[in-house]
Length: 178
Image (tube, one colour):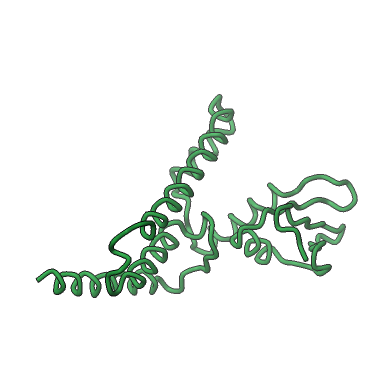
């Protein structure tokens, strides 16, 4: 059984193939992205030199998603990131980004927790559907960047479905209040 508390070690061979040391098989960048979306920490090292290549491969995964139109980072943010490499801001940017994503993860967790914890609304008919819609909304808004198992949205239909179901729930709530 794999120890999910330790980073998943991926070794890169001279042929540039990536080898999962837990399952003893070769993996792709998409496999690595899936491990990360599932909450696993990943470490990628060069077999021969022992160099840590994790950052390089994570940037490659992000670049591939961005090039496929799965844009999460606005152009002005990307521009500011490029600028930060040549300014004094380079020392502050990593901490700022890490803190921002941590706040986003915490906010998502607290919002979901508040939806279920000691809330009289939990007894309301349709509450589970509303909570599921809230979870889907968070996933759609974060683009799968923060915690949880998220699959890419297909053709933007998920957001339309959420809007439709939310409108139906609001209509039911309005009828219950009369």
